[in-house]
Length: 143
Image (cartoon, rainbow, N blue to C red; front, side):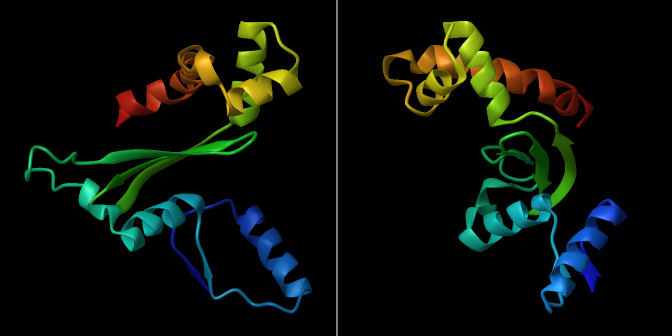
């Protein structure tokens, strides 16, 4: 077995037990941040991440946010390697709740508006950005 990044031991053990119960044996376990960095590398988007002292038009690092329903991952990739990652216990459901509050809609109507904002695009983006900004501001300042 080969671990690429620290993760809670209990979580790894639970996943391995699940796979073992299905008579499967994992060879490699990737965390979300490593998988995201691999996607950038495989797709050739690694040109987005420049060398620290190199081309000033290229950023020395990029931030990637993988947004789930209830939790998200914030990862900073430098030189094609995830060098900082953090789980954020905020996700698409929080965006929907914020849109619901802002527009006075029930959750179903807010989800529909979030997914297809039409002429309300700017307001919906602002609502989502305000939720995300609160969660990532400290990390951007730290890094």
